[in-house]
Length: 512
Image (tube, rainbow, N blue to C red):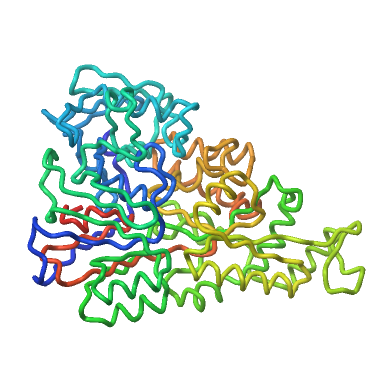
């Protein structure tokens, strides 16, 4: 049973040796550039990549995921599955949080019980809903009982364990985190940087640096220039294509360039009257020029996508295809749906109402901004009164998309370690991150089948059937399967380990 739960076929690990330079292992600071500030440092509540990656340094989970996406022991030294709905974890002895307080099974239970509490509003709650009970058998043993077999569970149990005593005692873990990871927080200068130092109480091998700074530089090119100027030691996706090509040819930097675990996509708000009909979404999708966006705007650093299933996934099928770019076909479809240029003004209209749509994305990624502006031009050429709404990431994500106030939003999902990670919470009825309001009972049924079977062939069939429906319903239009790029200074005096999830641990000398 354990081997079934561990099953994964996407494996890409790259350990990169670096030349010895100014870094003295264990004494210096590594400065890592990132694009957005963290929203929170409570691992249960993270919504953005900076928060997730920083929390991964401050906290430890029951397991960690290697560069090849295999769950490996972390706080849990071992585990077993006596039956398909039971997993028992055995914690390492004498675990402590960074302040020296003990970490026991009660903390694990508390962490997952709070995540499962609907009132806590954990963004990733849906990933854990098959857990029907979490019990402390004794201080070092935790028993998970599932409502049904749940294949991807181990891939999600890297969630950082929080201190029950600290949280119940009133400590704000969002701004004053307390974890058992390799680093601990020193200072958080909002909008500027997050300063960390080595956790001397860490259970594992010590980081190779004494301090780490996560430097927030919103603009991709400015971040690349800061690396070139020596102000940063490492940067990673998202990066602008022109910067990737330049850095790749600069022998001052090591690099890792590989398929990523993310997608760039259009989120259609199906709750919006203009987008509630799947045929309307199909017509809009036919105006998405993937080739230009991926191969010109992004200069080929990503790959044109065909469906919600990534080519790196064991569930992928090349036979499942979204609508292709076809402006004439899109206009014809709009006409069939009653949208025609009756006024001779070049704008399609119906019942006296113009065909108007708003495209949105966030300002920190210039390639996404350029893509949205290009889509606007294509939409306008097809007779659509298309507007663009660009805002900073916090406003765009938290105050706009997550409240369902968008129409068509350009976004990305990362850390897709299993098809379930991209599909279940996002596209099941009332899923916790179903920001577009999509609902299809057949898709719900198939996605539940996909997560509850331990037979990979059964899971594959379920996901492919769901993907075929989604390619027509189009709550999402996947523009590209993202690549992953990492660049780092060769002055780093220890091997840097790249992880396609973009985690920071491999940058501080903790191999994955």
